[in-house]
Image 1 (cartoon, rainbow, N blue to C red):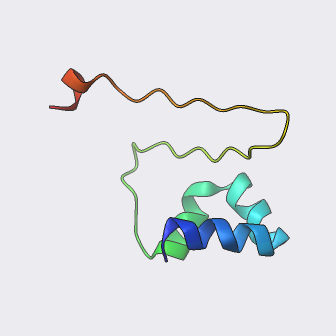
Image 2: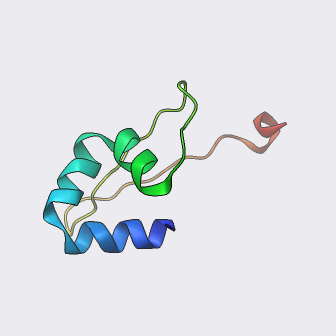
Image 3: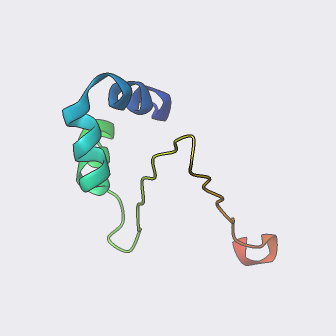
Length: 64
């Protein structure tokens, strides 16, 4: 399942959306059929008309 399909699923299924927001790691692992490394933090943020999320990527020199 692609990330766009995950988003679509969340738009159409309130129970899935609630699970994704409450426990993103388990929900994504189940939906994607993968196991994420234990040290990977996963955050799901829901945008709305009154919220802006800005994600700062790591500096290019730290990606070596």
